[in-house]
Image 1: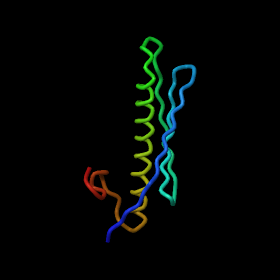
Image 2 (image 1 turned 45 degrees about the vertical axis):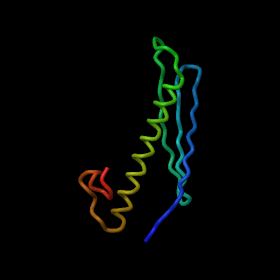
Image 3 (image 1 turned 90 degrees about the vertical axis):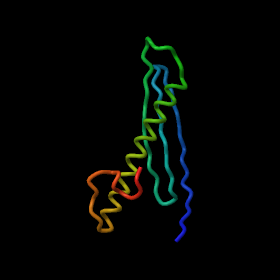
Image 4 (image 1 turned 135 degrees about the horizontal axis):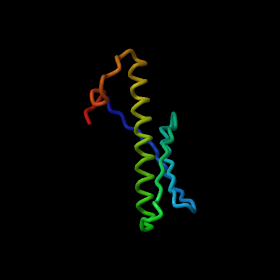
Length: 95
């Protein structure tokens, strides 16, 4: 019962004049799309290193997307009559 699919992910980073980096990551499964958001702000006393803001904002957006994907999987599990697990690690494959 082999199963192979390809999901596309797009990551967009935006920085404003106030030192805030915002990230939006879009997961397109072909059947649905999920969007995660994250942001990072450079403290005025910190050295300006835009790559750090990019990393933080992107990581937070991907974390937000991952949570949405896990929530969707749990809803789908319940939708087929399975009981909701007490912890996420019990669902499907171990982490």
